[in-house]
Image 1: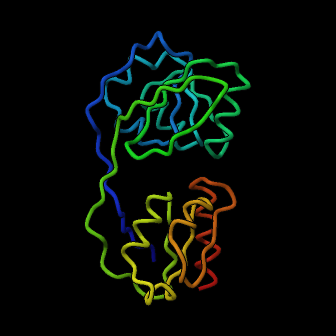
Image 2: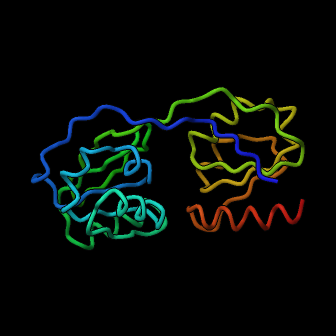
Length: 196
C-alpha cells in the first residue's frame, strides 16, 4: 500500500520576467515551473519551449505554451537537443534549488519561479518500505532524517544515481530507475514491491 510522505512543499515565488524578445527558447527541467510560474508565463508562450520529459511537457502545454519540444529523459540530453537546434539564448524557468547547468554552446539565463520548502518529516515508516527519492536534495534530506541504525530496514529507489548517492550508506539496498523519469521510477517500484 503506497504511503504519501513528501519532504518538501512547493510554492510559487515572486519573480520579475526578463524581456521575452531576448530569448530564442524557454527551458523547463521541472513541471513545477509551469505549475507555479503563474500568469507571467503568458509573455513567453509563443517562444519554443524545451522540456525534460513528458510530464514537464504536458504541464507546459497546459500552461499555454504552443510549441513544446520534449527533450530526452535528463537535462544533459535536453541541452544536447537545444545545441543541435542551434538555439543561442535560453531562459531557464527553474526552482530555487536547481542544479546549475553548464553549457558552452548557448547562453542560459536562469529565473527562479518556484521554491520547495522542507516540511515536517513524516512519522517513522514501517520496516521493509521501498522509499522513492526524486532528487539529490530529497536524498540528502532523507539521510538527515533516518538514523544510521534504522536504515537497514529500508530500500531506496532513486530516480537517478546522484539522487541515490545523496542518501548515503547503510540502507538495505539502493536501486535506480532505468531512466531518470517518473514512469521508469514507478515501473521499478512495482518490480521491487513484488519482491518484498
